[in-house]
Amino acid sequence: MAGARLTLWGPFRLGRPAVIVHGGAGGWRGVSSLEEVEAAVQEAVRRGVVGRDARNMLVEAIVALEDSGVLNAGIGSVLTIDGRVEMDAGLMMDDLTAGGVGAVTYPRNPIRLAEWIAFNTPHVLLVASAADRLAERLGLERHPGPSSRALERWRRVMEKLQAGAEDLPRRYVELYRLYYGDTVGAVVLDKEGRMAAGASTGGVAFKHPGRVGDSPVPGAGFYVERGVGGCSATGIGETILIGRPCLYAVELLKAGVPVEEAARAAVARHTRLFGGDNLGLILLDAEGNAAAAMNTEAMPVAAAGSEHELATVMKRQS
Ligand code: ASP
Image (cartoon, rainbow, N blue to C red; front, side):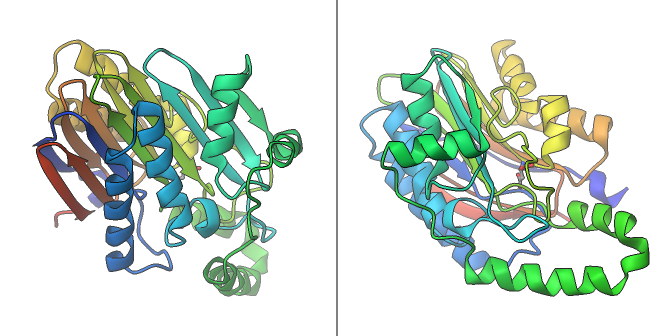
């Protein structure tokens, strides 16, 4: 099966501090050029690596990705089947503090709301209109609404979908599997050796309103453990929620498996469980070694540390 092929990036020794980010695994039928997304992930690691601590490094890297406008998060978010932006985001610190938001529409930077929830409430996950009201009360910057690129694609695909209306349910499922991707995520290690991981997304394009994926859920969209390592995932959220590849990858690190082997094994396991074309992940260990793996067509990644800075768009090897 072509989709079952696995592509690996790394390992790279980044040192301490270190930041690795991804710009979403998928088929890259997105509306942005590969040059634009490579520049966006590179800018994000530059912003992250100068942060004052793991929390600040992680949030600033993800805010940069949300603000890029060329990835499926923040102002670049894809649209639901009814043409609206609904975003998920979450983060976790290596002391097991975590916060996330699901199906929010108000904040320009959902990761800032997830951060606030992690550090100021006893909760992990807040969703939909109540989370939006909180964002407004906190004075977070407001999301400008669907980008012209996202709207234009939504109109184009909806026209095609409606043209074959008799097959609507089947066509909808096909569409869903075709248009995931471009989500963002990051894992960081600060100078003191503290770590954090997180993700942010507009979700899968053409999703049902109210659908929440893996990106705000610790263990699924991201996971980190002190002295071990951290992971951020991207792909079809329904498979990631069930398979928990980030938790699995970090458990492998804990068992002493090298970072590239752990990344490869986590994606291979996911492929065995769910088939191909549904997962990419980035992995960073507590020593500052990074790798990325995917079973999709492409995934932009960038990493920066005291010993290295690099960015690329990973492509499936044919
Ligand atoms: N994992 C995200 C979701 O299912 C989508 C993606 O990574 O592209 O919401």
